[in-house]
Every structure is written in C-alpha cells, then in structure tokens.
Picture 1: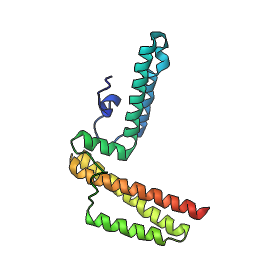
Picture 2: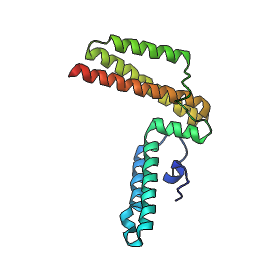
Picture 3: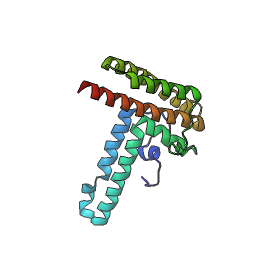
Picture 4: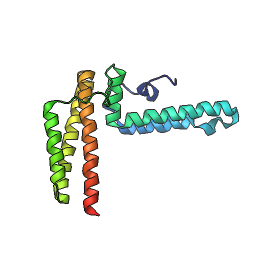
Length: 172
C-alpha cells in the first residue's frame, strides 16, 4: 500500500465507474482491519500515528468510491477533467429548462401527492443521468463530457433534498 496511490489502486479496483458496492465494502473492511492503530500498539507511538493516517486515507477513499456522484467526479478529475462546480455552472439549455420547470412545480406543490410526483420525476432523471455518466466514463472514456453530467447530477441530488425537505414540512 502507498499513501500516494489513487483510491482505485488503494482498494485494488479497476479504474471504472461501474463498481460492485459489496466488493467496495468488503475491501474497506479488510483494509481497515490491516491498518487499525490498535494492531500497532506494541510498535510505539510513531507506528500508531502512521496507522491512523492510513485509516483516515482508507476512509476518505471509501467515501469517494461508494458514492456514485463522488466516484464519477473523482474519475473525471483523475483523467484531467475536474468538475469545478463552484466555478463552472454551464448546463445544456434543455436541462436548464427542466430545472426551471421542477422549481416551479415545487413552488406550486400543495400536497404530499404533488411532491411525490415531483420526487418520482427526479428519481427517474437521476437514474438517466447515472446511466449517461457510466456510458461516458466506462463506454467512451469521454471524461470532459461526463463532467457536464456530473454537474447535472449534483443539481438533481440537491433538488431531491429540497423536495424531501418540503415533504417533511407538509407532513408535520
């Protein structure tokens, strides 16, 4: 193991978007077991400190690998196409229109049923964007194009959280 390895190398996984979550979970447990600081208690404070660094590094990699959005953004960055969502908010016009329609529908929603309908549309859109990301990254290695889909998925996830928050408010 090397602290400078990328997350995929660290976990011994192919550098692809499509991953088996069960395999990621199993590898995380195995790596954490190997690097647990208590295993190095008899080797002194320095060895325990290094084990702690390994544990933190393994957890960071695990958080990125298990989350489809973070994994996609990480793969784009590894291949020279950083998402830069804070500086680049460009979206295709059709997606911008969809965002406005969803926002209007959310503003006008008056019942849990209205919000559930919006939620279903958002879940379907999320599935479609995830499929596009997989196709662009694993199928075409089109990382620059995938960046646009990653930004779209970021919006979809934030909007889904807004819908859930509004639903919680209506149900109180």
